[in-house]
Length: 251
Image (tube, rainbow, N blue to C red; front, side):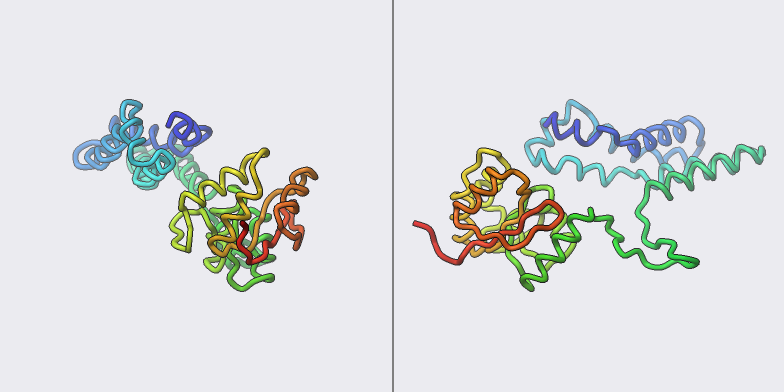
């Protein structure tokens, strides 16, 4: 659980900005406006409290970071510059407050539209997926209209976001045959380990009808183990090798 918490907070400036905004709101705002920040304080005290980590761990250690979505980051950060503009008569302070607010939302948010030549157009990659994910996703859909795949952890979540036609054995909210089963976990563990047994990966894939394996194959020894387990090489994409296993059940 501690590792999950460390990953959540490492370099997460949004939480720091929200904390500053909440504290400033509690100190500066008066009357009903102060009540606006009370939920943020209560939620933060429950979620960010180290004494509560073990409690959340009983539900899902890997889902802890999702709890941060209920923190009112955007309204809390928006309230402070709005209050500063209303409170001060100094135009310099007003401009600085608005400038900081705009910078936070522009550079920290997701760009839905991008400047193309002289006009704004819909971004070609609004989800900000890594380029390697886009290329691997395109390649998989070229090979098969609805590929059932096992991939490295660096790709599994993103590929489902790229296209719902890509069926992954392990990912969030997947309901395909064998998805997130004990066999899927075993497959993931062996694929993730440099010493993993690729025969187990192949057996589990064939048991549930998963045909394609996508993994980083820059290591020659690893490539040899993959091919020895019965996989045949299909295509190389951005450092990832796409392999296919025949639809036969291993003994």
